[in-house]
Image 1: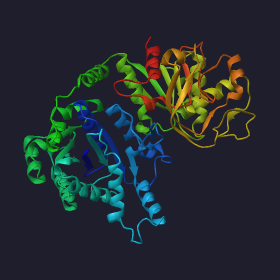
Image 2: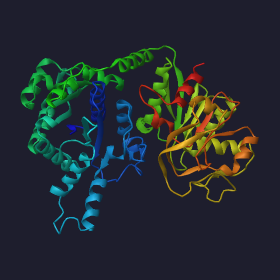
Image 3: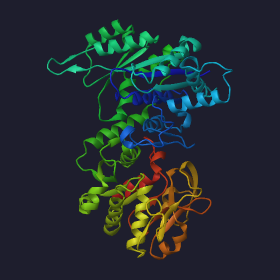
Image 4: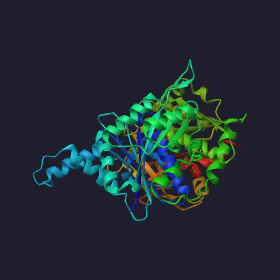
Length: 521
């Protein structure tokens, strides 16, 4: 039977519950345990399909087509394993499932209520991850204790302790310990009140993780231990850092996972953190490097840093693996449209994915700049569509070339609707054309890549592009083009799929590795 670790948050949101949960999962896996992860989000969207990146950052896609917010990406990268759509469950999914069963008459005429029907559905969702091969399931509860929306989840995990037994479930509460600037004194009262609110629900946290900008003094830790009813070694501090990679190691120094294993009555094995430590050392060296490769990510959600989280992580990891320090700047595609020369100072350009016409002309301008100036350029999703349309208009003289997303009756629909006309999402096989740069980069004839798009490259114009110097270097098994390149350029590659979803912190995607290698020459 799987054991469970439940991670809740208190005082304020945005404390890093997801990173804390992912760190715990990574540390447990480093000790030789098999781990799975799940997050419960209290919002009523069924998934992240229609969520704006301004809300929760990027939308992350799993192999089976599950869509969640950016925390899923953190989970996969920290844990270094593929997750599924069952790893991100929203209130929309929970309530929809209950209502559907009620409509089918599954409740024998009962009045359907939050308790027990909603809470039972939450627990049933958790049970799906209870597999013989899984030692521990780490479960994050979205929101903050005291929110109306997440109360059913807290009630459900309270019941789990009763049903599973004390040695099979551990509660971790991530909370904020502010510091008064004038006196330099930490204030523990917000954490005490948050823990009391949990206790009023019936949950006594086993471990309290204290987020703060400065290290906690011993008297603050003693006070938290006394008033939160938690033993001293279960008060763990998590100090603000710009380098998220360091968080697991800092928590490990305080025996974070060891305490959890003790409470779960599991053996405290010696962890293997050599690769992670090496990666962190490279990251520290990169931070202090005098010379850095400058990379521009051109997109329209540049006000939200996390809108392109997987891309930025993939670029940074590629730099670390190649011993190259990389400075990333998010550049508004509208700014590129008005002033293309703002890209002059960058060694490489990534044109980001997205949906909608806003900012698209700026992506066209970025693709044109990269092509004409032979600046290494990786184009993804809508960014790749922009690259293809720009080439069609300005090289193939296909005046009016466009996407059917923006011009359904375009005379040259070089980007067309998928067949059938629906969002293509999840992992699908991709066949790589022999002799191409993409073939050399992958070193394989067939790969699986994750997709999230409604429109695709139009194979009808393949010969025209080939005649003018652009090669479709990957196709779906049915022959639909999925990637292109210009062989005469240093690096000019566009993919309809999203390679960033495949990148990990210890092994980036080969496309990003080659991109960094090229601009670092």
